[in-house]
Length: 239
Image (cartoon, rainbow, N blue to C red):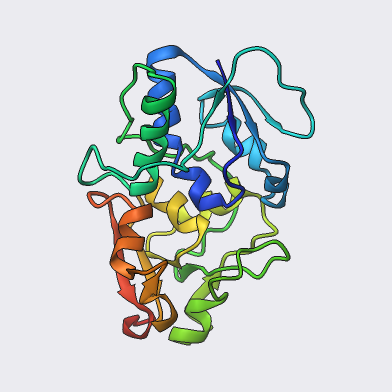
């Protein structure tokens, strides 16, 4: 089976589809995946995805010519939830497939990101912060550096993720650091949730209402409610 995800090049929205793809793989076997070329900005994205043991191949859409039958996986559809703890965005991917392809599968809500064992420092005596990065193609409806500017943590007690590292490198740091991971509404937080890492997701007053809905809904949109992520106002952080 070939699957193309063309609806988003945002890392978090993209990763919300992984439990759905894992469910498809459990029922139908590994798939070829085609992703948008803009996702090259996430260093090591293809290697990271291939390590998840879901795909026979991962390609950018400007490197391939799609032919024959393939599944266009999108979240641009209804947001009805088939499980109360499942992220809304994940449910939307699920609903798209059920409405458009009638595929027989079950969402893999136990899916966890696989992380390589690397020989890198995970800063065991500090707290890891995955703040929102300032990139040329970022969705600028949200602010960057939310934790740094809002909580003003002691610089001697925290380490900010370096997004020039590849994804697997940063995932290894998040997973192995013994402390809670601190982040905000950004892609790396959703990856942490899918690693089942204890995570604090920060918000500030600019996020109180997002797309006409309260921040609590935005959290429910992207995070599993029965994993280890918690929504906290950035001013309430003690770091």
